[in-house]
Image (cartoon, rainbow, N blue to C red; front, side, top):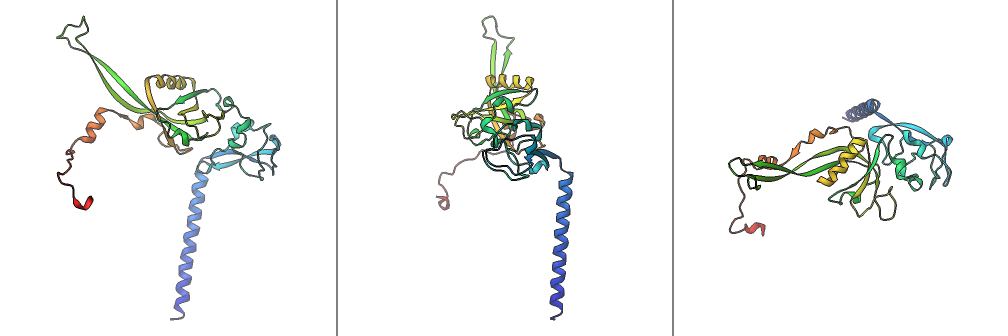
Amino acid sequence: MKNIIPLVVSVVLGLAAVYLVSKLLFEKEKTDTENKVSVVVAARALDAHDELSQGSLTYKDVPQSAVPRNALLWENVSLAYGQQLPHAVSQDDYILMTDIRIQTTLSDCARQGEWTVPVTFSDPALVKMLMPDDEIAIISSYVSRDVAVDRNMTVSDGSGVKMTESRETSVLLPCVRVIGIANERGSFREGGSSGGTIFVSLPPQQAMILIAAQRESELYPVLRKRNDSAALNRKDGGVVNAETFMKIRKGLVPAELPAVPNKDHR
C-alpha cells in the first residue's frame, strides 16, 4: 500500500504537467495567430521631463486583445516627438496617449483624411465614464413621419391629409473612436465631463451624416470593447419600431395584480 501512494501521486503530477503544457501551447498558438498591433514603447530608460525623439522610441508588436488602454500606436508616433514625459519610463514600457496629452492638440488626434466632429448625446451618463481612445457605437432614435391622403375626402383644405408619426431606433455608426471629450477644465484628453459632448474623427461623408442626424434624431452612445472586430456591420442591429414591440407582446397574456397580495411577499 505504501508503494502505491507515491505511484498515484506521480501519475497525478504527470497529468497536471501535461495539462499545463497543453494549455501553454494552446495559448501560444492563439497568440501567434491573432492580429498584431504596433505600439510605441521606450527604446531605453527615460527620466521624467526627457524630450521624446526618434532615438528614444521604438515599436513593439502586440496581440490586438493585449493592447493597453490609451496606447500610442506606432503609426501616430510623430505625435510624441518633441514632447516631454511627465514621469520616468523604463525600457520597453508603453508610451501612452495620456503621457503626451498636455501638449497634444485636438487636430493632432484626427486621422489622415478625416474630419473631427463634436457629438452631443441625449443621455450624458455614459459620456461621464468615457476616456479618449474608447470605442463606441452611436445609436439613432428617429421620429419617422408618413403622409397619407384619403382620396374620398376633399384635400384642397388639407382635411384629406393625415400625418402619422412613429419612432424608429437603429445603429447609425457601429464603431467610432473617441478622440476627445468636451471638458469644463479646458482639456479634451481627460474623462469626467458633466456634459454629453465628445469628439470623433470620421470620413467626410460620415461626418456630414452625423451632423445631420444630430438635428433630426436623438443619439445615444454604446460602449464597445477596444479592437473588437465583431458587429461592424450596422445592418446587424436591424431596426426597433412599433412592429418590434408588437412581436415582443405577441402571445403574451396581460398581467394583473391580485386583489389581495400574497402575504409571503409583503
